[in-house]
Image 1 (cartoon, rainbow, N blue to C red):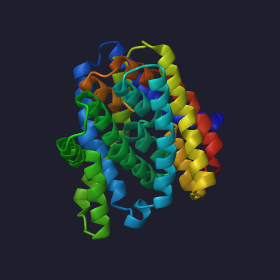
Image 2: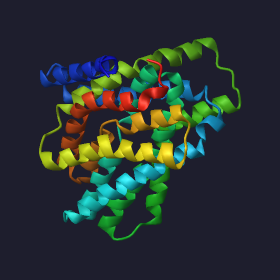
Image 3: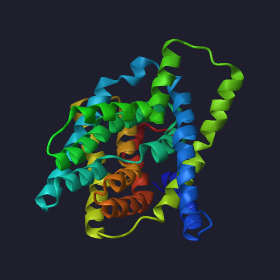
Image 4: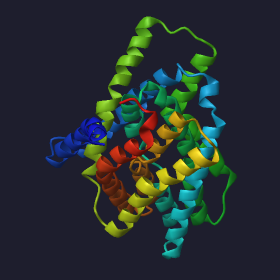
Length: 312
């Protein structure tokens, strides 16, 4: 347990460094926004392409893995949604809370951290989770928010969702990498070295950007944030463990990766979405802050409990 904690500590130390730099005004909010764009559009996309180009389609389309993660996530999402409605909050707010209970920081934190901690073979499984989160739940929250405001779901909304997925650099990096693998397209050495070098920048830059962005987050609605953090860091990995190990009988190593990935803190892009639609952004902000701080310790525990397949 202690050994695992010290392995995860450098990742959170870089997050802390980003927080300190932004808190001391050495790193402005504008600089954080541009660093985030660099990671999202270039560095992380290069890393995803690099890994997906080495995958086969059969490895990526692991349906037992997909359904185990999807079923567990739907259960937690439904629970978060129901708890919000029972508290009397609007449907759109309940949808945002459910999203926070279910979607972790898989892109910016999960891929770089789990690739180094659990080995490069974990990345294929993490990318499946990323794809499910973006395609299923990323679409669902927009449908619920816009649909609740307009009273119905329009066909134009579906078109916008599809176009949004097409323009998402992470999704495109996965698709492009898989095409490269399927058709065995040769990649010249200088181009491969370029992708490798660019992808190597994603880990420190992504972690630093996470920390810097936390400065803008608030600690309002701590009680709600504590519930969401509990759902995300405890209930979600627990539901995933039950579905993966007991129901769908997923391969032990793949199941372990899925469990650890589901224990990641609330994703930062939910705040961007909440801010865009003006739906409980302070609540999301507090949830991200609380879950990220708690995950410094909780992720080590989850890896320790689920990591019998890992060779540390």
